[in-house]
Image 1: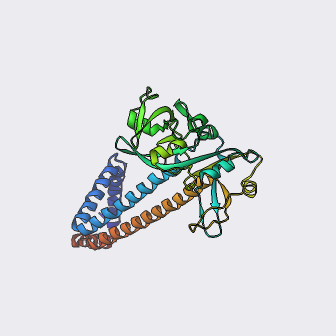
Image 2: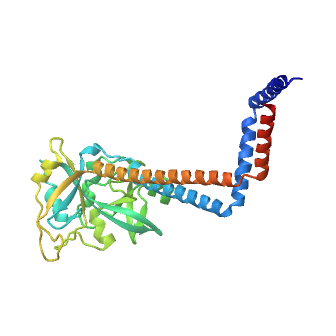
Image 3: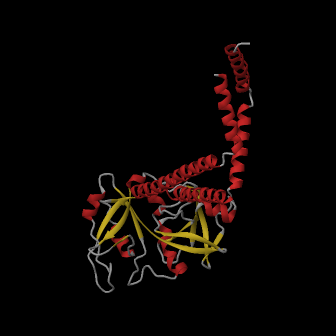
Length: 347
């Protein structure tokens, strides 16, 4: 048989065989198994490289998980209050210092300004213990729930009459997580007692799951601010008042943050040096804007993690390719030379 005819017949036979193999349903599985065996042999020959690869991937995944957990807990959780864009955080600024904590007298001076605010609320945050558990407690003014429009699942929120007398209303409102963790979502929890720092409080309400307070960290329960002294053993209403209150205001619809800053004057206090009174001015920033800034910071952190993982994957791919080229066996080289010789002879 002439050589050109033999070449044409061989091409026809091998082409038909290749087409049959490509059309086979399990060809992708065979290729995957071969790739998996090849990768396993390469990693087994280079155990140090395998350990480095696993460690790099573990660090990247762990870092990404940690950042997303923080992002989800502090940024993505719902801000479940009525009209959140009218809620402003109040801070102070002096010539040499700045802060966000106030005295009780500052709250009493701002609350009557109904020309600027629909409501002003005060809150002092502390960690307390209950049945061996550490809880985040918010000691709040009596108008806290009404001013925010916080949703309540069971019972009621705190009211003004709960915070009228120092130590006079030992009641508490539980957060949904605390209700689920300590009381197993018992609907008959109202009227039961919870012990906080060896002080018994009567449970009068449970908030809905979406409401977890105004702070970055979710609150576990809320207590009238008048219970701060009996529980924390610190007097917020003494002659010399400590600066431990965080103030939040709901502005009227016709008032902007800049207008409120210009209209509010604060009594001087010791901002930096003990015994020296400093002139301070109030600053108003939307609570939503603060949460947005936290979101931008978390997104930047997540993008950095993604870039790190992308670089790790590129480095891993380059190392695998180098190892594949270095591990090419002499038999493969010989088979390649034989095939090239055969093609040359046929030609």
